[in-house]
Amino acid sequence: PMQKQQSGFTLIELMIVVAIIGILASVSIPMYRDYIVRTKVATAMATVSNIKTAIALTNNEGIAIPAIAAGAAKAEWQKIGMRNEPKFSSEVKSAAVASGGAITINLGDDVFAGVKDNTITLTPDFAGSVTTWKSKFVPNASLDADTVALVNQYLIRNANGS
Image (tube, rainbow, N blue to C red; front, side, top):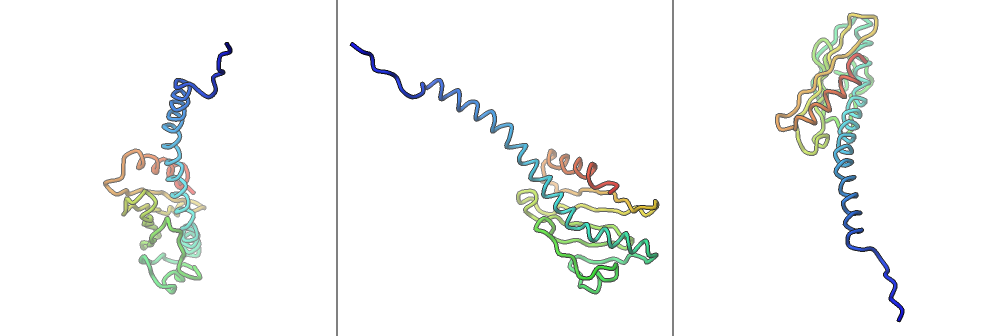
């Protein structure tokens, strides 16, 4: 008598495939989350680049940089040579300028998955022939240490000095 041919996968083969998929997912999901955070911080920094340029130009022209509150009217932003008040991406809730040029960026609530009240402060250094910037991340106390370290490392590599 002829034996019936087996078709399909055995239970062991299916378990091995599931285990491999699980290992790949456990490595890729945290990396993906880190890339998302870095992208959102980069977008926030790009959104305020026009303010950085206006402050540097105002300083080069020998004009004192006034304090500009978050949500200020167009006339306030025109004091540093901007045509209108800045428009922000969803990654930036608001931005304010301190007297002397330091920019405080209030990050949007969706940057860190609902952890609100995170800020980045950019402080200009006008000493050299080119204006450089020093960044400082002030996280909400409930933001996890790994995310804080990730953002600080990003800012050191990409925002300081540029």
